[in-house]
Image (cartoon, rainbow, N blue to C red; front, top):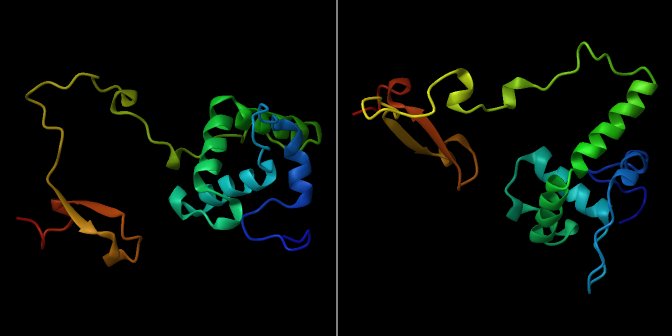
Length: 159
């Protein structure tokens, strides 16, 4: 790929230069390591599009390899280190207002017990509502997805 031909969802050279020092080099093995920038771009493509790993475009290499890097970097704290280094840099430039820094709670799913509910469910507690499964094709989504709707939300289709 040419230097000037950056594709959508990929890091620019300036962004890569900020992040690259935070990424550890893979341990030496019998094979030459993959290009970490290509692996990170593949990970970002998946995270930004929400596509399944198997739908990763071939330009990033094997989806299994990219997924392996994602799992490794997640487990060894690489992503935390990247975020911390970027925060330190932005804070030193006065670009972070720590009173406003937060996680978008609309995308964080908590367990039932996090809201104060009992972790144990008694045999008398009803935990599942009647659910009607609709194929996602009706919503122009991927064929392997499903929409879950409660029967109350779709009264014409219930019972």
